[in-house]
Image (cartoon, rainbow over all chains, first blue to last red; front, top):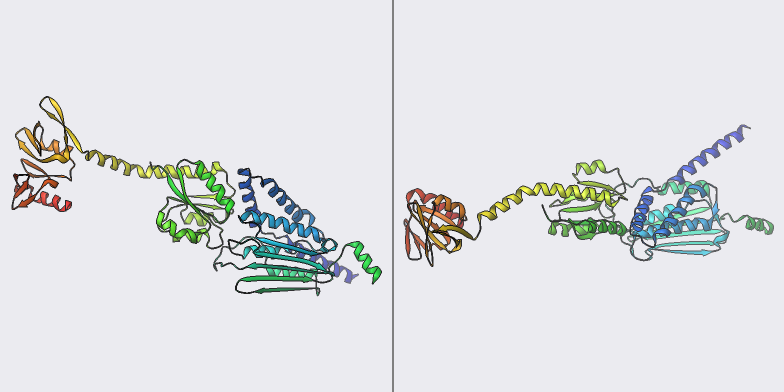
Length: 219
Length: 242
């Protein structure tokens, strides 16, 4: 009985920590997006309604849909697409992000809001002006192994850049991964003079219910 | 009041630039000279153009707006534009003219620039008055009563003026004009820097002097004496015009 209670308390502590870790989204991005949408609306740009819908979708996911243990991988990818689309408002040139998705994405489930921080970082540390396709995002699901690779050019930033409020650092993501996918993930971060690369691999990714059953049946 | 305030925009986001450009274009007393995406790119141009006003974003990748303000020389008036309100205190220290929190309406924008424009106008009015007074002192002609008519005399035609009791005889290259006037009254009408009193009875046009020898001035076949009491002031004026 004592052991069960202890386990429950531990579980609760972990859940609280996880919730805390994922809840911090960079408000700079939200304000920036609102400013840009304000301009689009003021100018009565035909792209204004879509931008508002993207923002609504993004916020709905963050606020309501992510309060679960796992979400369909496709929904998480959809969220990343919303984010990329809203970030794109900042750039005049055609898409600065090349997003490639491979494999049977529909079958995967993942802990929500896990990838966004890598993507946020890629924008944050890139140069002010980005060429089309300068940020490369490659997401693949093959044989229950999910691979996410994000690569961005490195911009020159002064040492005393203003601190951006909110946002969640890399150590927090690492902590969250350790709690969610202990001993079944690898995270590699490397940088050269020009490029910054993050490669995350999660093995034995949870599949959709019927596929899990099928797995059990055949193994 | 100054016709227009010249201004620049520095913001790293193109939509933020566009809305500012549109706001500026709606205000008749603002003239946009250019838009930059970073302070580093703008620096040289600002130094050269010396705009009156700068719309400056704070959060920019290369160099933030607050760090840029102290580097500005000459320093234009600065209106900060930012999505955050937390830098307002620092902005106050840097003596910025306004702090616009994005997104801001045209009305809010206009309120800020109008106040600046009015302040600017008040500061420049005394200068303008001086300018007008200066013009009044330097017409290129005067009207003088000659006999029963009023004669127009182009001031640059005057060689020298000779005093004849209550009358003045004005010598030009073509003619001599007698007018009932005192030297004091005439000197009020003439551009002060161009003429010099050299004697109780003589006033000369400085640019018509051919040469000066001892205490005599040669102007177009006339020799005009310089009296002791006017020597100092005359030479002082001469030095000023050399």
